[in-house]
Image (cartoon, rainbow, N blue to C red; front, side):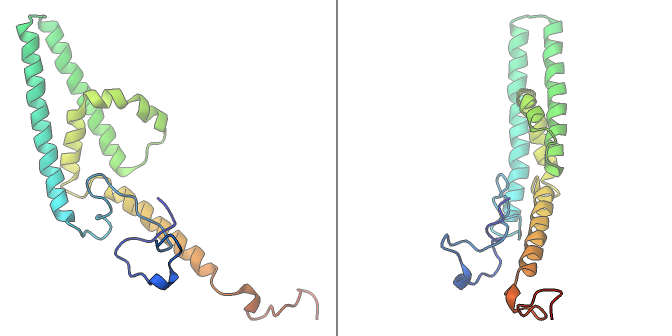
Length: 184
């Protein structure tokens, strides 16, 4: 999250704009498929949520069909029941792990990003779990909205606090008038 520009949708006075053209203050972090529409729930936010819900479910169902065709290919190849069972078990376990890790990613940042990098392959195999996590979470909010909103509001409060404590000319404050402390 950048603290160099303010949230979209807030009234801005263009006379205070710096040379770059952005208003001062924190900038909300965009979400996949939503951009920054999650801030004020504008710009087609509701339609995007419906699209993510339906799209993730359709993608998960399509992925299940693809996996079913792959399993049928194993049956045609007559590799044996053990191999078929291991393939099904592998996809089930990987999907469960991918669901859990994707769901956790909606509520908090990963403590160890290198651990997330190591799980990338496992999450790729269990992509159906990630799609289902998107499907379930999009009923409540844009996936990851709560985390981003908390971070954004914290950054806004910090920015406002810093901004209010620095207003005015310190030399013109009452009581200082250029005198050193301890002298008359």
